[in-house]
Amino acid sequence: QVHLVESGGGSVQAGGSLRLSCAASGYTVQNAYMFMGWFRQAPGKEREGVAVIHTRSRRTYYAPSIQGRFAISEDSADNTVYLQMNSLNPDDTDMYYCAAATSISGSRLEAGKYKYWGKGTQVTVSS
Picture 1 (tube, one colour):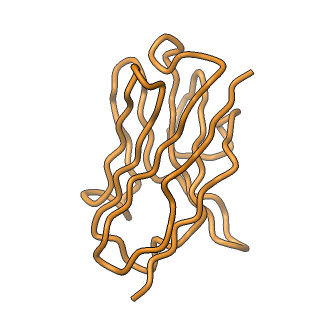
Picture 2 (cartoon, rainbow, N blue to C red):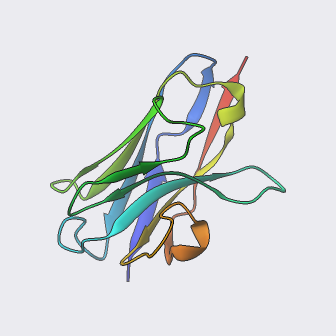
Picture 3 (cartoon, rainbow, N blue to C red):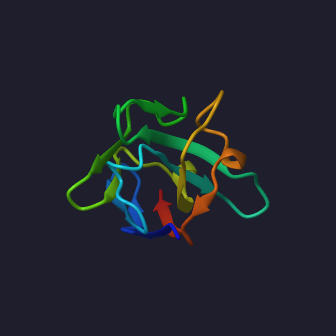
């Protein structure tokens, strides 16, 4: 059973930074050759893909809205995926979720293609 636990959310002022972590268990990040991603969702809105990494090739995919500000990475030794978020602005305020999938065709940033999900961590950016 795949289990994902997010951490690192919090409150920060505009222009600040946060690093989110997603600890994976039930499989090893490197050996499973999985797509692992970060998604975010505000109340009443659809869940939006933010960044995805393939744990074998380490190829990354980013939403245009965060390109150049966020960076996704994975540490196979810790079985953890990170999201470094810089130059945060109030529009980045959301609940952030970690997700995993073994194979994906087409867009890697579509939430419906991911089978495993964490419970989320809140990010709040004040102006």
